[in-house]
Every structure is written in structure tokens, then in C-alpha cells.
Length: 174
Image (cartoon, rainbow, N blue to C red; front, side):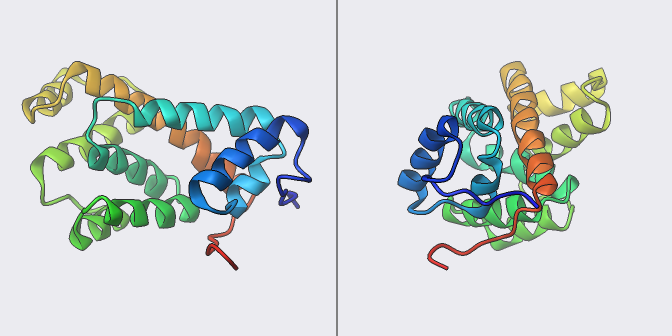
């Protein structure tokens, strides 16, 4: 239903984004190839996710946010991709499995990120004072709380779009 573009077949305004992805990963994932039908969405997601990568949240904590959103939104592509990224960042198999299975994390600081992300999602941002205080009590900052909102926005966009285009999990080189 959705065209799986190459750098050559993509709309002109999507080509630069696909080229960046190809340089970074060594291939163009099927999800990006399908999202290329909308240059604005593809570029917007790249910018938002790039901004999220620049936040003060630690890399594993950022991935906890992403996996929490991906699992909640049932985006198999994001779950597969970010499970691998968590492993490359040194997260334990137990942490990855717990995120995939919606279970509490053994690391209290990361668990605070997971719980806070779910609170923001479940309450559409109207998180209670107690939940904010709990998040902050684990060494996180107000800035981190707002950065989680950025991550939720970026990866809600990604998960919804990936599901809409029925993006498959693909393996590089196949």
C-alpha cells in the first residue's frame, strides 16, 4: 500500500534525509523508505529524534523512554530496533526483556524514567505532584522531565507512522 522508496525514487525533498540514514546505518530501513512518501514527516522525525539525542538524559535513559513508548504503542519495528540499541549501549538482557514485557526495571533510576514516561502518556501530561516528586527524587531534573516529553513526541510520531505504513522489521543487506 505504501511505496518503499529508494534514494532515487523518493520525492526530491526526502532524498537528503534518506541519504543521511543510509550513511549512518549503511542501508535504508524499510520504515524510512516508506515514510519517505512524506518529506515533512521524515525530516520532522529526524530533527526531533536528533534533538532528543542531544538532551541531558543519559543514553540508556533515552532508550527507556523510546522503548516505553514503542511497547505501549505496539510498534514492532521500534521495539526491535531499540532493543538492539539498548544492547549496544550495554543494557542488560534483563532490562531489555523487562521493557519489552512492560515489567518494572531492576535499576531504580531507570525505573523512575519508565514510570514517569507512562504517567506522562497516561495522563496526557497532567502528571500529579507526587509523581513528579518521585521522578525528581531519583536524581532526575525538571529539565529531564521536559526532555521526556520531547522523546514521547518524537517517538509517538515514529510509532504511529510506522504502524500506519505497516513497516516491516528488516535485516540489513537482505
